[in-house]
Image 1 (cartoon, helix red, strand yellow):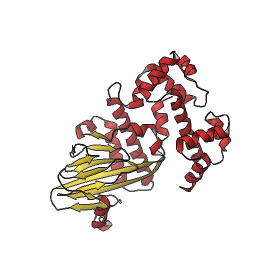
Image 2: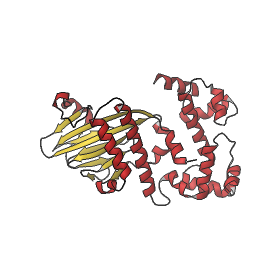
Image 3: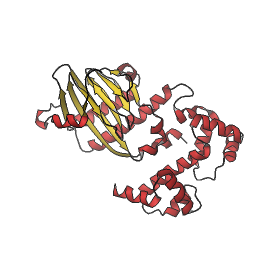
Image 4: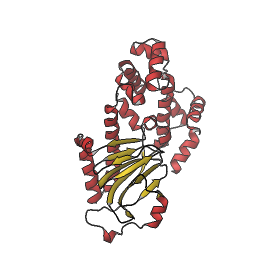
Amino acid sequence: MDVLSDVLSWLRVKGSLSRRSEFSAPWAIAYPPSDRVSFLTIEKGSCFLLHDGEEAVALETGDLVMLSPGRVQALADHPSTPTVPYAQVLEECSPVDQGERSAEQDIYPTIQYGGGGRQTVIRGWGLRFDSHEHHPLLSLLPPMIHFTYEQRSAFPWLETTLRFISHETHQRSDGSDMMIVRLVDLMFVQLIRAWFQAQPDGEAGWLGALRDGPIRQALKLIHQYPADPWTVESLGKAVGMSRSNLSARFQSLVGTSPLKYVTQLRMHLAANALKADARLSLAEIANKVGYDTESSFGRAFKRYFRVSPGAFQRRARTE
């Protein structure tokens, strides 16, 4: 059982977007909080990223950035340039018409904005994930993961993925839309893995727990057999730890108790089942994720998602 792959599989891509922006100094744009994981790479020039009132981050040509959902962001030619809301920018400037594009540009809208000075070209992508606000992986990510061009060049697979994305956006053919979504999703996984591997021991939230032998084994067992009637004692026995030691170390490394983690996993499995297979009854899903009765499952689901399983399923079908 690959725990990271299993947790990543809970993230279902709900939508995506791609945009190329050509900015000329002076310019500064404030973006509202987004429900997407956003990616941007600086194709030409340089700029500054400002987020949540923290110190501005300088971005240079070739840099790659991933931004977590729910953050207020701004991009600017200089930190002192007054920002303009993104919605206003879209109203003030028209996307470049198809006939004005060069053969190297793709069919997604390219916007041009700024005062006519030094140029910065940014390529951006976004992925919207279903139920992202409940996902344990996205909740532990930093606001920004930043790879300079030199750092990015150390990962050949990342360069290959970016080249594939560029190829599909420039050389449109049947299936390109799906290819771009899948490739950006793959880039997300690659960046998560690279970020995790770069974190020192004791960091990276519950992902860091995968470096601890007994806790890693406990997580593997929980993911492999989520419907088992786990107790702290039975889980401790399975990994060779006392009940108290397992509980303390699990809480310290994962950030929650073993049984709360079991519940969290069961809820995500149940949510995916409700969305994926309308033929399954609530009783069958309850049994599949370790609940003896439909009523006990319904209470646990409503506590976690703040909506009943039936309402959750109806909403998912509508969407």
